[in-house]
Image (cartoon, rainbow, N blue to C red; front, side, top):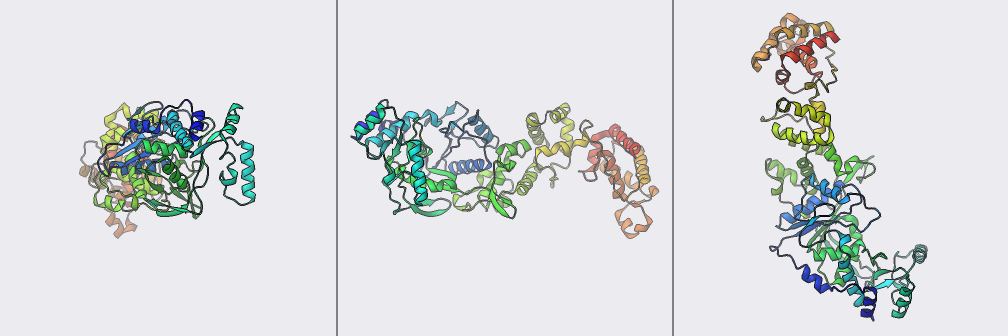
Length: 548
């Protein structure tokens, strides 16, 4: 009867599971090589948690000489967004996450185990569903939405486990005539698993991160194919992970509760289960407590945020690795110049509880990374970022690349470079005083020096500034102008007799710094003045005098 029922339900399916096993043979990989996947839905922006999971899956596969592929689980057509696949691919690519095989665009892919888009695998799912019906392990269910709602309410009232099982599985044992009668009336139906589980029995998940987790068997007759023929996530992922040769599934721990369903599906389908590693969500400190990073509340939840802000992809991945393995920071301290791929990552060293996201720590890592870039690399990164996010700044950078590179090279490419820049979006403001077009011209003179002394310092300095001086000569000129103006030529002289002076050489150079840049704190003043040049420095000194 079951075979006849399978033919009635799936007359168009002529393939068998054996045909599919031949079409998708076991992968020819070295012993111990792992196959992992990232399998998002194209229903919105890429979450930082998604990037985290993808990074871990990639590292875990590649360190074993295995395969990391991208599968798109697009069975929820109602929530799908336009260009959703491309948004995912571009978002991952921005942070160096690439794949051995899988989807490469909205409608393009590479690899021998596709299609990698679930909506194109309908025949494959129906082949396995037909086989399960033929073996008496699945059945058509004609229950209406109203009937399902009645069952849900009754189960709630009786405090029973929700779902279709036992007495609630009304279509489980329909005769073939009863099925034909309903089909003749064109009644919609779904295909359900005929579960053989018992919640009194327990199964054990040997999780690669969380260790052993014991839970009851599944006893629900879950839906395998919806009324439109589209598979549920549970059914599709079991079929796909088997045919694509997935050995290790790395996913969020919200899926732990679904493990009993997946365990039973792999068993009835005759598949070997992959190993599972369940990652805890990335958390955020909030009002003394912790909560998940929220798509609605936290801009940093979206991967696009880091790209827009201009955090280098290497810094973001470096930071995520500190969340993944707590020993990464010690390794990095001992191997400051090593490629991150040399780090001996282990799933077993991941925290079973959620990692706490720390934007301050990311900023520190990013500052450190940017400080080590040479000016050529930083210039290229900056123009590439500005091309997308700040066209005005791009035009200034490209107007005179050599001028821009001289600016970016101040206190760079030295033993202890400055760490002022945390992200590319900071640079425009950081160097704005080099460009009249974007400098606000505000002057922040120190309060401890009166207006008359400031004017005297600037008047004196505009006449002695020489852009051909070396650094020593330049500073000596400033030192020599101090005593006639009532300032100590050396800070220690001022410290010894503060009553004899208005201030010291540091105060004088601060006045010059503010007139030239508007700021009291900047990188090396000598380099700034030499880059600005005689004409611009003189103009700025005169403008400052006029403002005062």
